[in-house]
Image 1 (spheres, rainbow, N blue to C red):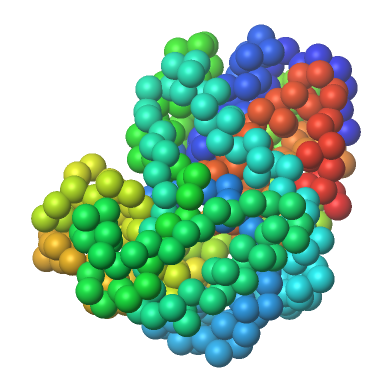
Image 2: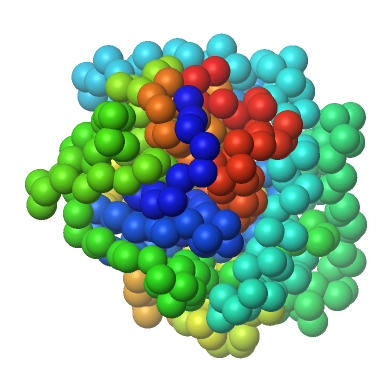
Length: 414
């Protein structure tokens, strides 16, 4: 529910989604306060792979995920790990998630992704053209396989995407060219595919640069502020925190994996859970010029500050649970055979972050049942890719009342 022309808005969450929303609200002349539970960009926006890959942005629930999950439940070495613990909420979430793991449901959801995916890279270009001082790099993603048979799922996905209207350009790379193009890929890779027309960034640097822009344009930044309630009143929207209350004309919840804590009180029925991902940084003997994907292990490798960032896994544990070092060891063990020239003895920046995964595999973007309270989240693994376009479309809705049809499938109260 909305009322026209808000003048002051509080955005809760200082990741890529929240900051993009704040930046676009400022474009409409709205005063913004950003409230963050820790520090700027330290959640899922910091340690992810930094891929801007709308060609790969698809609903997470699909048949192969369900088959993989059944075979890997409780297996701590699996890319998908569900710890054996009593958590009725998690099992309700997973049961709901499983109902969307069909080809028909995937087709329906993917058709809803296609329009917003098409806008994703342009939204990044808009931010950098306006002065966000962190570059985007246009490079293919090199998917490396032990053999051609392992690549069949990728080519099947290309066919599926084409059927619903999304183009993903891929080409086989001759092995004779691999060492020159990507010497980081080892001789264990006997089949390599280039996924064209993708970008990558240094995610932490980009989020900080965006925060600097938002702050320079007049926003207040309240960090280390844990929000406990958000309530509509006759005087506006009241945001409660341990440090006191804050009142504004409207509020945006961009709280990532913590969305359910507040959203469930506002008519948001779609569950959001933390699908935790791990990453670390490692130096390399030669510069890496483009991302490398190890699909059989679900591992993403990205050029990062003269070396490589390696990330992956999906672990359904509480968002604030500590790092599980075994998961990091599993990433190293799975990556090592496929990569050459990596200084495995110099690992730094070990990180775990909570990706906000929705039970139906689609983001939540728009108004709630409470007047002037909005939601932007639930993007799963695609929050970095879709963050700026989410902020742009949501700011338009809030500032003008005009809802782009692109957002229709992503209503938070669906």
